[in-house]
Length: 193
View 1 (cartoon, rainbow, N blue to C red):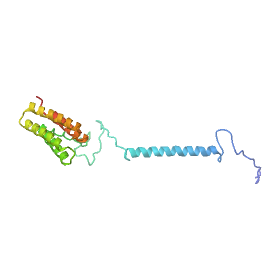
View 2 (cartoon, rainbow, N blue to C red):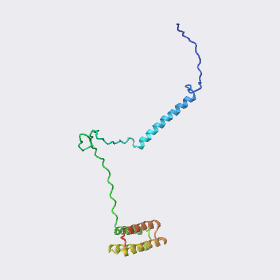
View 3 (cartoon, one colour):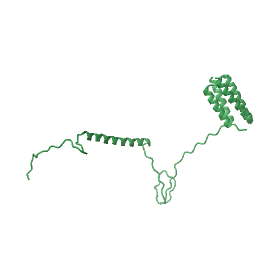
């Protein structure tokens, strides 16, 4: 058999019909774009997941069974038994104690201070400040001497006066709301008759 240095050549078709496309066809380019977009979407999903979890996955804690023994770590201060290593629980945040409820006398004093600050700033009419201040003084005196029924009467008077003074524009809207809320708190703390 002799070697033919110049064998006859045959032309191949440039476009094939069917599932596969020639290297320069638009279909191959489209598959490349779709594949690149899929890879990009996967990478973005992974990066988003890492950003949402803070970048590091949370370690999973598994309890050691009776047959498994764990290696003690530097953080553990308990002496391990020969069979099972005891892991001390992580410290938990103690709930902050609930703030102590203020007494009626304390609430009256803070309401008087609020009224005085409004009067000094000119946010409450001088006459309104005098009327409401008198009601709060009477209320404080009755609470201090244990006259609960009289204190409720004074509190009712203070609420009525506040409402009337607001309607007469001697007390502004915001000041009215703050003072009314303060009177409501006093009512919650005032002993029932």
